[in-house]
Length: 178
Length: 271
Image (cartoon, rainbow over all chains, first blue to last red; front, top):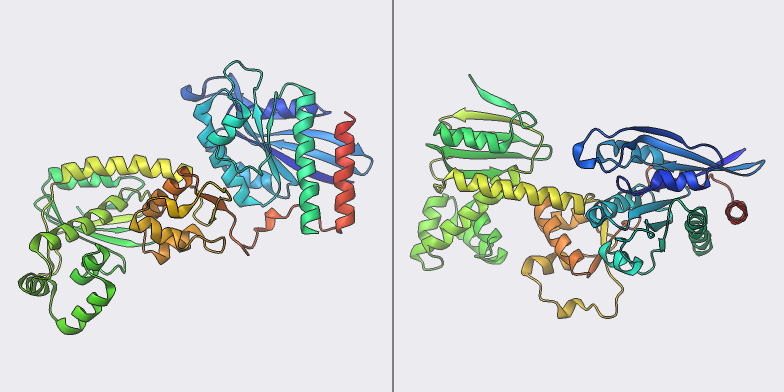
């Protein structure tokens, strides 16, 4: 049995757990705890170690989705989680501009861990305060060749699109380096 | 009791406050992760600083301040022989090369740059040796610590911000491929041009800083400005060996890898 892994990362409350839950065939193994910091109390619980979802491809191949903890003090987990990843997805909460800078920092950090393909998911596009994808691209200072996709992490079709775009990027890179 | 400890327990701000309030005279030695700094005080006033192996002689300071070129510095060094800083300073003033103000401004900037850099050190041992002062022939100044502490705190905030923006100095820089962005049309400072001249995916930010004798704060500040202007991008350095964990796919051949990704695509499409 071969297993491959993708990492879903992003700032606190950007929708990583929801993203994995939408497509995982198992109940996401989540290590959530009550929020202890007042400043981060925009939701009740947060991921402190990792989320873990699974998509079985066939008898020989399984895809695992790992979600990183969003709170900065757990960033020591990031490098461990990035080990051997096929690619990664950076989730951004389109409605919370105060997290854009952190999202850029996380993106840079993961790029330093591994030169694997990645896509940026502009999550919560269904939110009335959500920034448009083009505006977000500018705010995040993403080059035009970086894929940035609108996303609603609770919508399975939307999550599938993001995963597929990442896989297409992986294929493209294989062709380029092949 | 000796005034010594770790910056993790007592910050530079707290130490300078203590030296200021107690009007201490002596030299503070701080052993940071990369360098050692010596800062001297007289009656609670900042008078002198020296950082690691940096050229803290008058010629070195004036060259760094742009008051003389490296070539001029070489000529003066040759002619100065074993003359000490005070004597050399007088000679330069009397010969009309520089004014007393030029020299004092240069030294003031040099000393303050070192002290402000100390504010960004969060780890390292410190020791205060009472009544130990810089060599007699050094040119000293007298600066109140209150303003330095306030300015230093602002530097810390800036430092924290820039560190979040540019966390990894082992990354390289590259010019963005934008037809509308032409670096020649942008007004840059001398320092920015010096950095720009080294921008190349082969050079890490850390190497660029080293080549330009800039500290981490100075290089981050310039890189941040260039990033903000949309002129450069941060990239992985060419030829950088990947950490073990950075390997992506299992070591199978290209055909198998492509087949694996195609199977993943088919599976997700069918969900």
